Length: 425
Image (tube, rainbow, N blue to C red; front, side, top):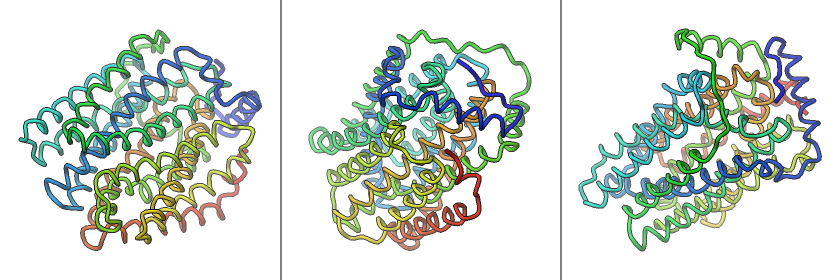
């Protein structure tokens, strides 16, 4: 696989555009022709179904234990705080170590955490501090492994299939958003919260087995320099490339101002829309429908217009749909808003991911993807805590209306003032 030089930012971006033209006209499933990518995709898909089941069940568990919007935000904060602290460290090790082994160990750790939550809930001794601690532990494993996961896609496929592989990976994640919450709604009624947590525990076996079957190597040369020095090198690399900076900024705005909707959705569903746990599951699922559409819009490269305007337009639309979710009191209108959020946010993030992977040199891939993770996921702790606090003072619906409007306004300003970003092909 060819690499893009990281010396000249402008030259790197020109090479990235050329590489996209090679992929032009390829079928939207082209990455599936690689058997190891197929195995990886299936394992991640099954595991993510379980994770979304747990996401729905955990939100409902927190409401049962505390009946508090603030505690929903605090649990989200605990689960995402490690991303803020550990993502950049994970990026360094993704450039130094075997990425497949990193992912294997992380999935084993997350399976153990899910098993403990299952046991605590099944025996009826679970308390809110258990949920907080286990969310912190699971979030730590995810944070250390996330850069390796993103970079590992590059290890599995040919460069001309990279955008397709990223889009298909986003598709499986969002298909799991449809299936997981839907199954969670049925499972909650049939075998309760512990049943959802138990299914998630078992689902990790799919990812673990898939990673054991894959033989694609990502061996790294030994690097004994301090971790902090490698982090500084990565930050300087991104800082000197204006389009990389802009893409990271967009990802951070989506995370900070739109993504807390998933944390607040349980209380919006109950208090503003009058829905029960099954209804909450269906709301998560319809959001996944829109997200699948957004991912496929990236996979169908031939049908996609110029990527800069498309990315900025989708980012603005994400804010407007979040605003609409906060204002509506109709379950049908809320479902429509969630479809819009899913489509526009997923398209924005998938395009940002693709462009970043095209622009970076492989020696910096893990670190740049850790910065993408920090921008998109690392701001979750701040976003969740802020959203939970505002919702505690006002309401969850008001919080979504305010943050959604702010996102649309800020991205509009960026669109008007950043012609180089609008010019992305």
